[in-house]
Length: 265
Ligand code: GLP
Image 1 (cartoon, protein in one colour):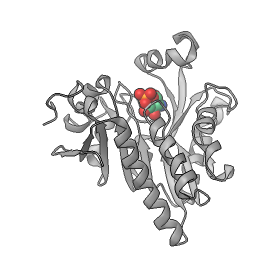
Image 2 (image 1 turned 45 degrees about the vertical axis):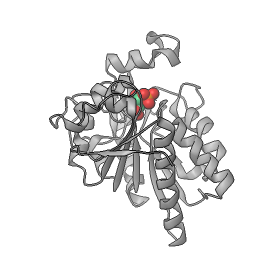
Image 3 (image 1 turned 120 degrees about the vertical axis):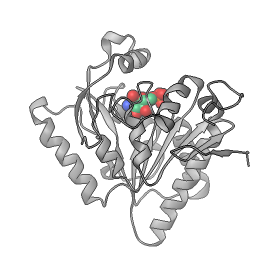
C-alpha cells in the first residue's frame, strides 16, 4: 500500500503519491459503502462527476465489479451535470461519456442512472430541474457525492457567482471552462454556452462529499478552495462548511509541482 499523508487544512485533505493511489482509495471506500448498504438491504445513492479526473476511479470500480464481485444492482446514480443543449447520444454528451466509461461495464440497472437531460426546452428547465431534485429526494438523498474541480473553482458547473443555496438549474458557462473543454469539442466555438447542473445547495446536502483533484494545474484553485475565504468567488470553497467533505489529491495538486513541499502546509 502506498504512503499517503493528511494535511491539517480547513477541509480534511489526503495527499497520495499518484492519482492512481487516490482513485484506488476512493474505489475501496465506495466498495465498502455499497457492500454495507446491500447487506442491510439498502440501496446506495452515488452522485457522480465527469471529466478526466474520475476516469481512474471508474476503471477501478469496474475492476472491483469484474474481479471482486462488487454488485451495482442496488446502486442509484445521479450525475452532476450535462451540457445544454445536448442530445444523450451525442458523443460529446456526459450521458454518452458515462455509458462508455462506466455504466456499460457494470451491472447498474439503466433505470437507476440519472444524467440531466440536455434535450428539454429552455422554458421547461425550471420544472425539469425541480423534478431532478425530487428524484434525488425520493431515492433517499445522496450517500456519497464524488466531485472534480474546474480551474475556475467550479463544482459540477457551478461557476464563480453561484450561491451557497443554489439548486439544480440551467447555467451559463465561464469562458475559462469553455476554453478548457475546447479540445474535446474540436474548437471552443463548438462548446455549448450553457449547462444543466446540480446546485451548490444540492451538492452540500449529500451525506458525504469527496473531491478529487490531480495535477499541478489544479494546485492554485485547490489551495483557494481548501484554505481561502468561503464564498461564491470559488464555489468549491463552500465545501469547508460541509460536515463530511474530504479532498483527495495527488502530490502535484497539493504542491503545485510533482514532489516539493506543499504550499498547503
Ligand atoms: C467539467 C465538469 C466538472 C469537472 C471539471 C474538471 O467542467 N463539469 O464536473 O470537475 O470539468 O474536469 P477535469 O477532471 O477534466 O479536469
